[in-house]
Length: 310
Ligand SMILES: NC(=O)C1=CN([C@@H]2O[C@H](COP(=O)(O)OP(=O)(O)OC[C@H]3O[C@@H](n4cnc5c(N)ncnc54)[C@H](OP(=O)(O)O)[C@@H]3O)[C@@H](O)[C@H]2O)C=CC1
Ligand SMILES: CC(C)(CO)C(=O)C(=O)O
Image (cartoon, rainbow, N blue to C red):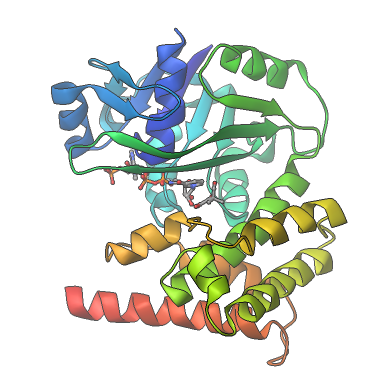
């Protein structure tokens, strides 16, 4: 299977690198600066699960795409998606599958509109990773799950082939027959985690130890849960209990990738991860009170950031 990984950042570098390490036919679609870094240092993964140094990983830039690929692993940030969609178009053929790893849901609509829903699988990853100053992928915890599947829940021959291609890679692939619900479950969890850790500028353990921190977290979780329910994707009690326990664990160092981006003064996926969830909820001003505060905070950060940068 010919695999194109779009972006060799934290998630694309990690999962694409692991696939390459396992002997799969992987090419990265990158921009000039990353191409230069990869040519100079190779693709480097630093991980408690095992390091990898992959010299000269196959990479292309947008203008160099000539062929189509069987599987396209999409790992850009949401705010880059419109440009990425244009850049990747040459790689999408009639049989191509696009497997997005982005958080949130709205990217599915954009990909469907451009490439047709039959080419777009559901997908998500659970990992904490970032790129360091030298461009090495730093895997920050022990999780490295990648879940994917047909959005109608079937176990098609093509997703079985994707599962086979991932079987020997050093991460945990999972072929799901309920990928849309999985994506919603993760969205509820992530929007709560990102919203609260960004608001409080602290990981879970510090938030729940602060006066009112636990209550704010639980209110936000309930706001997110209720939007999912309103959209026909209520998390089960077991899923909610797991989210509750991770979001309220005493001493936990857990924080969202959005908090890492925000603390570095970077761009954030405010609209994609938090704003879009709010937009799918009730329009009344009283609904989703903590979700509204979390979104207002992120938009204020963005406004200040763009003013200071300009
Ligand atoms: N990091 C994490 O721990 C997790 C992230 N996620 C989600 O995964 C998604 C990706 O996040 P993450 O991997 O952290 O993001 P990164 O910013 O680390 O990586 C994204 C990569 O996409 C590249 N890119 C952007 N535009 C283009 C383009 N036109 N052509 C080629 N490459 C392009 C960027 O390249 P360039 O260097 O040129 O800017 C960058 O390297 C997000 O939706 C995020 O929320 C999900 C779970 C965990
Ligand atoms: C939920 C979590 C922490 C792990 O995948 C994540 O998606 C993120 O930080 O963006």
